[in-house]
Length: 123
Image (tube, rainbow, N blue to C red; front, side, top):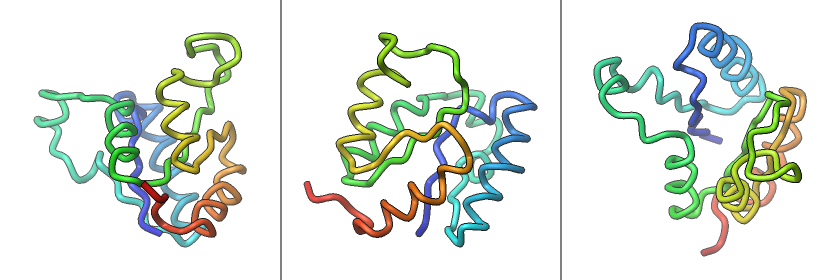
């Protein structure tokens, strides 16, 4: 599968390293093709506009794409203690047929589940 890798990780040195050396590499090892917006977009454009990963998730949902969320940070960042991420983001991910994983090891099974369900969810 082609996988668009929306992520805020490119804004820091440590984040870029994890994104490139761990996440992108894992997706390739699982025989998927990552589409990396950090390498497709020039630095000047990134510096000028940052619509955010949440906006990209909303766009993917509106286009009928399945969404897989990765949240490796265990700190609370959601609207309430029962959520992993922002409630609107979580809704889009789960309603798309996707899931939110909390470890790199979970990526393979989660991507396999999305692939088995088909490349697009019914609108």
